[in-house]
Length: 182
Image 1: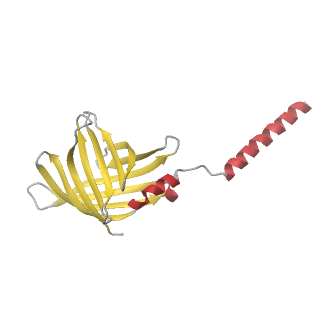
Image 2: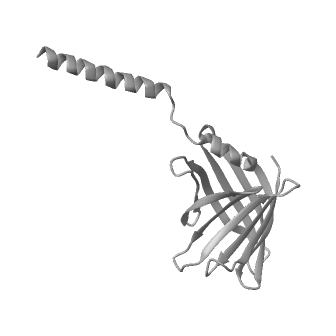
Image 3: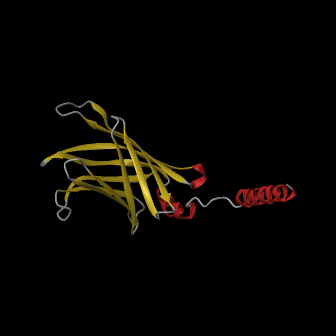
């Protein structure tokens, strides 16, 4: 019985010691890697064009609001853009999206989760590139879509969207230039 009691006490001390050490050493959150995206943080305004079908470009204007959240663990990207309805001067919301950029330390990958106001959702891997980042996805029909965002020498946000049916030949369908206002 005495041996059993000693074993229990020893086990309890080992567990409590482990808990005390883990409580003192906070888990790494990839915040160092997230800091590489701090250049995005701010409010951006501008516009561009989107081509819904070949040869039919529609202009738009809007904002991208980028905020660091959870003490730098994630970055929130919120886009709101307006365009005119075809055949009218009336402006309507054509793009209303919210995205979360994060870093998965175990996989050593950046992720981008994005939601549209219409309920559509995508989850994509992010690649850091010179002066920016790139993300994309494949749709159910097998089309690959990618967006490339670069900060220009003037400090502007330039983004292009492209699609590919074969993963080799790309066609641009989107172009946006935003200026930092905050």
